[in-house]
Amino acid sequence: MRIGIVGAGFVGSAAAYAMVMRGVGSDLVIVDKNAALADAQARDILHATPFSHPMPVRAGEYSDLNRAGIVVLAAGVNQKPGESRLDLLCRNAEIFADIIPEVLKAAPDAIFLVATNPVDVITQICTVIAARHGVPSCRVIGSGTILDTARFRALLAQHLGVSPKSVHAHVLGEHGDSEVLHWSQARAGGLPVVEAANQLNRPMCAAYRDVIEDEVRCAAARIIKGKGATWYGIGAGLARLAECIVNNERALMTCSMVTPEVVGVQDVALSLPRMIGSGGVVDTLMPDLDVGETACLQRSAEILRHAFNGVRL
Image (cartoon, rainbow, N blue to C red; front, side):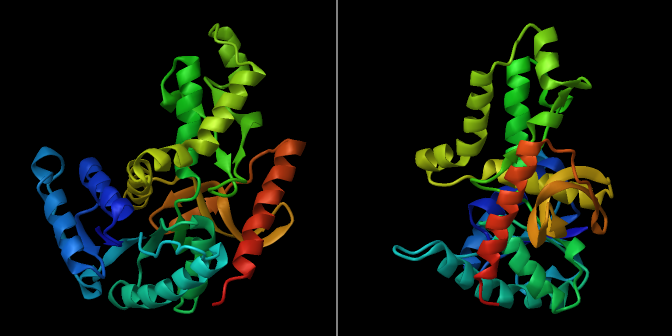
C-alpha cells in the first residue's frame, strides 16, 4: 500500500522514518509546499532503507499520491506572537480546506491520519472538510492519545518492573491538558495495577500515582523545553496506526475520531479505544469509568466541543 505524508517537518519526516524502520507500506511519497525540504527528507530516509526495510521513498506533488491508501496530514502553521488559539485553528482550517481536496483528487479512497495539533480539533475540522467530498468519518483518524497511552503504559511498566507490552491502560479524551488517565481499569497480568504492584512487592502509593500523572501530562512540555518540539514518539505512533490499517489488524488503539455522543456531549472528536482495520475505524469501545473519570471525560469533551464551535469553516 502506498502511503503519503503531507508535511515534511519534524513529525511528518519522523513518521516516514518510523514506517521505513517498521516496514509499513509498499512505498512512501512525501509532499510539502517546500519542495526542497520534501526532497531532502525523502533522500535522507531512502538512504536508511538498506539497514531496515527496502522500499521506495520519494518526494512528489499531490498527483503522486495516486492510489495511496493512507495519507498522513502533518502540515499546518505555527502560532504567531499575540495570536489566539482560535485564530490559529481558523488559519489551519483554511490550509486543510486546500490540502484535503487535492489529496482526494489523487487518492479518493485514502484514509487520513491527522497529526497536526491541537489534534482533536484539527481532526474534527478535517472530518467536516472531507465529508463535503463524500469521505465517512471512519476514514479520518487523529493520532489523539496514542502517545499519551504509550507514556502511561511505559511508566506503569517501569514501576512494576515488567514489559510495557504486559500493561494495559489507556488515556482518554483530549490529547492535552484535560486528558483522562483511566486508572480504574488499568491492568497488568489480568490484575488491577495496584494489586499487581502489591504482588510484585512494588506497592503503588498515591504519591507515585501522582508522579505518573504528572509525567504523562507534562511529558510534551518537558521535551519541548529541552529541544523545541516532539516528533519521535508521535512518528512511531503514526507508523503503528498505519500498520494496523495495512495489515487489517483490527487492533484496539486509543485515537481520535468524531464521535456522535460521549458522556452527554454530542459530535466531538476525542480519543477512545477504537478498532483499527483496513477501512479505518471499524468500531469504538466505551470503557467502564468510575464517577470521577466520567466527570473528567465529560469536561474534556466539553472543552473540545467548545473549541471546535468557534472555528470558521
